[in-house]
Amino acid sequence: MKPEVLTTIIAAIVAVVSATITIYGQTRVARLTDRLIKQREAASREAQTAVLMAKYRDPLLRSTIDLQSRLYNIHQQKFFEYVYHRSPVGQEYAINNTLYVIAEYLGWVEILRKEIQFLDLGDLDLNRQLSELLIAINQAFGHHRGGEIFQLFNGEQRAIGEIMMTTRSTQEVIGYDCIGYASFVKRLNDPDFASWFTKLKNDLNTIGKTPDVNLDRLVIIHSKLIDLIDFLDPHHVRVPTKHRSKIRHQP
Image (cartoon, rainbow, N blue to C red; front, side, top):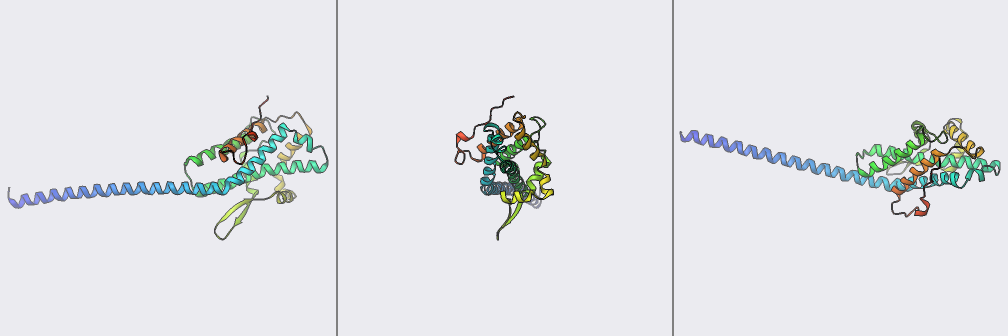
């Protein structure tokens, strides 16, 4: 074989090897870069989750506490038998305030749902756990089992949550808040607003007038709310253990 041909072959082999090494190196670098980008995105989503939970944990926890406390008092402490029959003023307060604690909880759930949607948190474990708990409460309100008292379908829950929201803006961000009790009572004078609470108001009147009414759904909702409290306050800082008792179901 002529030296010129041998030199050409060797040069070609060297070029192929060099190209292979270059391609391998570029592929490896691309994979490492992609892995780093995904790690950074995951870390960013986790940071966003932490910020989101820090922002909304307290109001969601507070509204959950208020709702479970009212349901417990209705079922175990005969709240409606005590307040509802005292006077017209007591009856109005028992109904309006109970409507509010239900609506406020649904309002914060809707706010959190919108924020999570905008942040696109994916399948983060924290987000998954919270979503499962909120879905369980949603289903407890809407499921066909549990009687008719306090039954709210998914669309009704979301609608009530939406009308409870108000825009809260600062120089840095635009967020949401839930209307307060005074604003809520005032808005009940608006027929369109009040219409979303017609069924719940009728349910509360039924509870006040019928001591032996079926409250199975109330028990189920209360149990799921306690599960949410356990998630939001795992170290029992805001809600002591003694105030997390679930209502015993008595068919």
